[in-house]
Length: 319
Image (cartoon, rainbow, N blue to C red):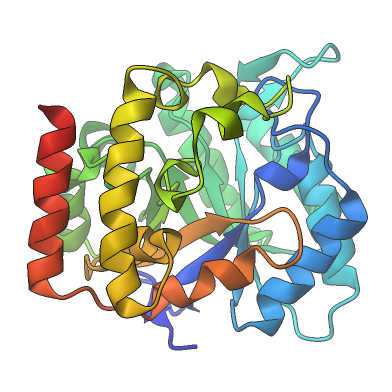
């Protein structure tokens, strides 16, 4: 699989990266229901087998569980993929998630992630959310220290806006930014995209299928069958009136995808990757077979006339 250079770093990432949010399982605020760890490990191996060269995880996914599963898979591999993880989302013994960016907390989180992942250094380390806002400079300074100590190779941030990027850039260069981006969430196009272009910051975007809405599989019955602790049950995009609008959009996307012999999910991923500044799109999978259904979205090029038709369908959804 071809790769793309990540901003001002020497890293080259495949256009699709494996997201491991869902393999953190259920039992926490943003869980996805029960998960089989053995199936998760097989899924990670499968992703590497089909050509993906990097994994995205975070300390908070499953309250440490996702990192532990990734670490278990890494231990079984001869050739290791690039691994990206995150700090800042901490949790109390009762599972309550709290944002922390104090220096001591960031340094402690890194040590915990190194232990769970069973690695000596983290390839890509990022602040998960800019919270508390007043502490982002202190948190970013701590990440810069970790780079100097050799515990982190490349530093980035997730969910930051341009004003926040400007505040931390003088402390240490931002190598990459991880924002959400999909047909249903285009917030980065106005300011973040040109800023990252001007400063050679790589973009690795998450939720290209908008948590599955753009996969073409989501119906009322599908939502009703979600586990009780799947956080998407409370997401407005999975409930009326947006659910019906999204279903109509999905039908149009399916028609366009069919002309390429591809799935709606692959079309959604290709749409994100049409932006040259986007290095890679993070695509989640939680059981073997799923990543094979989406990975080829990284090589699909959508024709201009079909891009225009997608824009028309999106405008109709908003009407």
